[in-house]
Image (cartoon, rainbow, N blue to C red; front, side):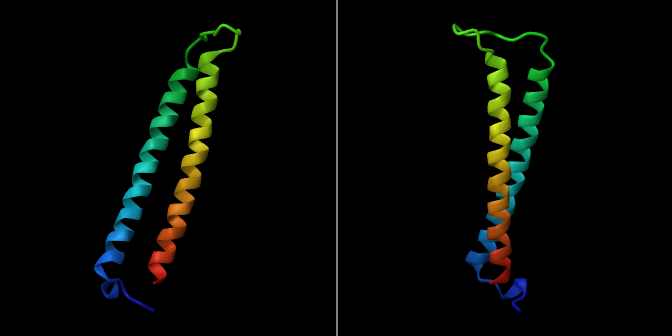
Length: 86
């Protein structure tokens, strides 16, 4: 098994990059949660020409973004675990 000191400079930088990416994604998720919470506290919605709620659509879009961020984090964590094994 290789030790962290055995990793090449490129591998160490890659692991740092992956770790930093997860931290950024965590912060983005917190920001999305905060925005979604603020939107949910509004007692009204803005209707478009078709009578559809724009803020409702925005909350749905934020939920989709959260799902994509979760997926990205899982992919990064997988890559990080693979990098740790090399």
